[in-house]
Length: 229
Image (tube, rainbow, N blue to C red):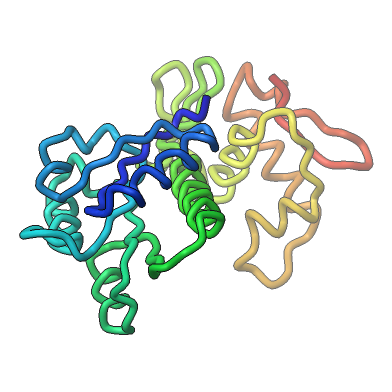
């Protein structure tokens, strides 16, 4: 069963039934409302997507969408407008409100299903983008990426910028081997000429500074360095 819940809001009951049937056939959980007033009585925050008609009763789809965008609980719910108002001005109004898509009537059900899938994919991709970590650590070795500090058993260790960047590269990618060329590109990207020996010197200093974890920085002859767990 598809975990996504969709709310269809349209004053054409036949159209609501057709959309509900086809979306449910695709595995979505679908509810319908025949007016914005009816829809707003529901807990809209539980839905993953709204299919919203524009021309309805006293509260239009545009007006309802504005209300949802002003409420923190519903501000991020994707909205696809379904409407016969397909002028450029109407489309721009919809997108300026925060629509994720705009489908003009009449439309094919296949098109609606494809647009729904596309919006859900975009939203999922945004949600799964990992937020950058605030800290990196290995056992009692910890890096604060905000404060640019390294501590070992709670005691701060003085690090140069390059040493910090090398350790960050290792702790963020444990067990991955980095060639000298790759390390030069990532850590010394702002410098024109850097010798391979420079990397070796920084690695030696880094091993000493992190004490018992120095042994975790291993050399793969002919390949480069990595931080082994």
